[in-house]
Image (cartoon, rainbow, N blue to C red; front, side, top):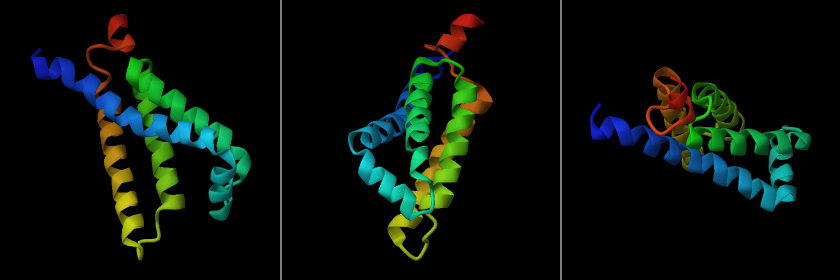
Length: 127
């Protein structure tokens, strides 16, 4: 295994996890605004806390490399659903870019689903 194969998977997992972790934290810091945003798109506000749990738990699982394939699959599905609900106003260039970014994130997560956590992970220690 080369140095790149050793160190890039953890770097990739951390970089993907940052967006989910920060998004979850931002929802905690201003829940009222986030409930309003969700409800404006027809999503019940009661789903705010499950959303926060998915984002933060998924991010932590990616970073530490615990059950990474399952975490990445769940985050990919979550990101697809969020993109379809919140970012399909393609007449707005910013929303089109947000949707395309979601697709790129999903692509990275699918790579983790296919190839696993790599080195520096709890999953790797089990094998």
